[in-house]
Image (cartoon, rainbow, N blue to C red):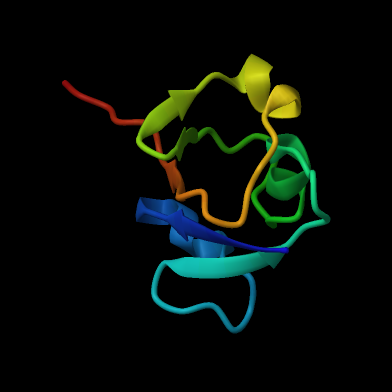
Length: 83
């Protein structure tokens, strides 16, 4: 299945080749999990980001437990820093 993923801020630098402005489509097997999807993106392991699925923030501990569906809205955001 095809999953649409949107990357904001500096994360856009890690979009796969052929992506549009800040969106890409990732192919994932039916029943695939969020951790599998994120592994297909070329984001370095040291890079921090927040994952939001269908307007709900997802904790890192839950990545392996969340099944991704083709109609899910998946957004990756860099952490917000204040001063």
